[in-house]
Image (cartoon, rainbow, N blue to C red; front, side, top):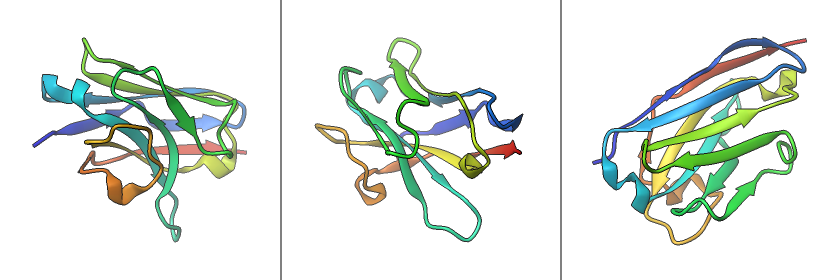
Length: 124
């Protein structure tokens, strides 16, 4: 079992920045590929970004490419999502997820463990 806890969400004006963190409760997090997903009210959960086990490979949704950066610190068993140039359409609950994957994956069903989510609200 891998417990994931997200933090760093909040209210920000359009054009602002936030950094989300996802802390894991087990040192074996380094064996998992990690992803960030988001879900807005009335919409399906969608992929945001993913990073492989070593951190050497990343993958982004087109909607966030160039604005968001995913990274991981395996020593601190934490994954980050730096979000810059935020837009109102980025408003959602953001979830981190861990999966036993050999590459970066954008499909929610491929991830085994999920955090409880953190709210990000971007005002116009």
